Every structure is written in C-alpha cells, then in structure tokens.
Amino acid sequence: MELSSLQRGVKPAEVPLDRLAGNAQLSQSKKVAEVSRQFEAVLLRQILDNAQKTVFQSKTNPKSATSGFYQDLITSQLAEQISQSGALGLGRSLGRQLQHELKTERPAVTAAPTHP
Image (cartoon, rainbow, N blue to C red; front, top):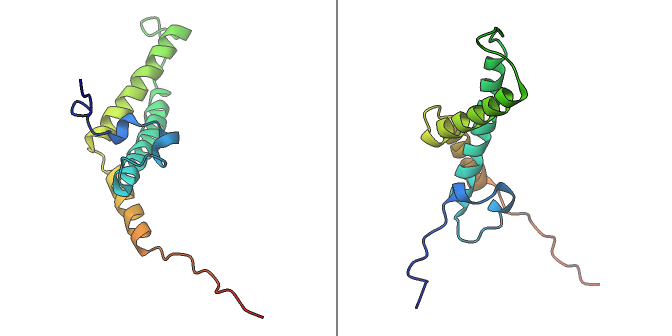
C-alpha cells in the first residue's frame, strides 16, 4: 500500500513557529504570511486581555482560578480566529511589508580573495 498519494500538503498554521523557518515544504511567502498572522494574533490577545480588565467583578461574575483559565482559553481562541479570518488586516499588511523588504534586500557582498 502506497501512502504517498494520501499525504497532503503542509498548511503553515499546522507547523510550530519554531520549525516554520526550517520547513522545506513551505515557500518563503507562506512562511512570512504565517509569521505575520501569528504576530497579529499575539497583538489581538493583548488587546482582548486588556479589554477584559475593565469588567467589574460582581456576585454574578465571580473571579476564580478556573474562570480565569477558561477566560484565557477563550481569549486565545478568539484572537486566533480573528487573525485567521483576516478581518483586521494587520497580518496581511505586515506580510506585504515583509515580502517587500525581502525582495529589496540585497545579497551580502563577499570580498574577493587577495593574492599575494
């Protein structure tokens, strides 16, 4: 039985961030787009987390370790979903800028060896 026909392409979102740069199956533009999206998600987490700090605690909204844990999970998932939808557009803008920087970056010039 041959499994190569069953294998699918790698999606950038499925690759851990620490292994993204070294992944040979992804193009440079896909890597840049994924890093930009993940950066947008980090910023969204911070914004959403700070927005929740203004919620007043009451008897109907108690603060406990369990509720804090679930609130963090909800915040993370919400930030991920917003960044994956592209609705904010920050990740796309950052990705375009990084792609532009990569295209205009000149290769390092190596000095020619000198002969005595």
